[in-house]
Image 1 (cartoon, rainbow, N blue to C red):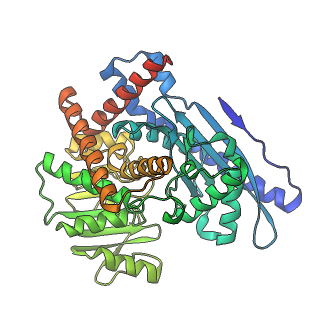
Image 2: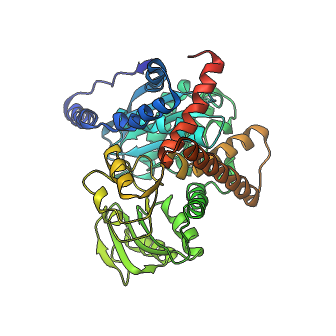
Image 3: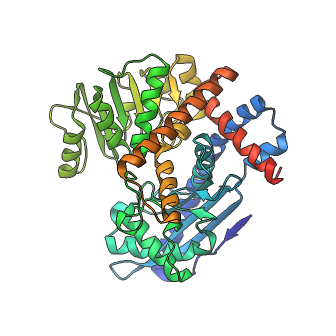
Length: 442
């Protein structure tokens, strides 16, 4: 089912600006194959589980899709029209769960892929959630706080009837933060006329957020990395780590790995990168980025490109930026022994095949970066029962979930004699298919 709200018609310069934006979005969508690439492992998994083609077709399409037009008055008085999306992929295991992304490259194809990955991610860690995702095509870095608030409130109003604590629960993602989740919740409360903190997660602590949520993705990635190092006999003490991306999800895992004796040899952000074979201090990198706007130019480092951390000599590679960063063009140059996907979909199917042949152990995104949604689940549970856990309790529960998810995936790999990505997909899809059969949906 697809629900589409047609854009408001504007005249003159405003119409031309909007038409230009829409052409750009359409071009991105027509050129993109993110969703098709995301589905490729499903076909391999279907063979392992002996799934009928009709089941594969059901899993290949989202349950519902919403596209909304968001006319926003900017600070200069002009009206800009943004396009917003919300996709609900599957709700057989529970309410859809997934973040809201603000980025210039957001398009329907990408949001569908992200919603699909959320279904699989929630399945592999065993949460009572399905998968969803949302986003707005915009550049939040070029917008004022007031403009972002107006945009967020408009988006919340536009999708309010599409979401709910028992239906579809958003959260923050790339380009959004806890303050935006607060604005979103406030707007939703105004519409429904009652306080419902469980409508959204990754909120500020003062309005029902969970302790440990800000570092949850990185913390979960760390737990998985430790388990992978044990399973594949790779000591972490002294191991060199390269991280593509140094935002809110990458910074915590860099610190956790540094604390157990790893060397952070390379990092990058959207403007450039830094490399030092002897290692760099994670907190000093954060301070440098705060003062200069980028990690490039870090004292004692060699300046490298945005994508270069993928191909530097290292033991552990952590892509923590956007999707499709490791492709058939650069996969041959990957030198790491262990690749931990902290970003969503950073490796294309073509690149994945190359990495397998090279013997690189890949811990897939649906397992490696599930810490964020796991603590979001904890936040949702705490909101619903009105009782909140300490940070130590949250951390202990997160570790339990992530270690079990890794163990379950690893055992599935051994059972079917497959790689970790295929094992994670097989585990998650088998759980999803069981739920859909129990409901009589397939």
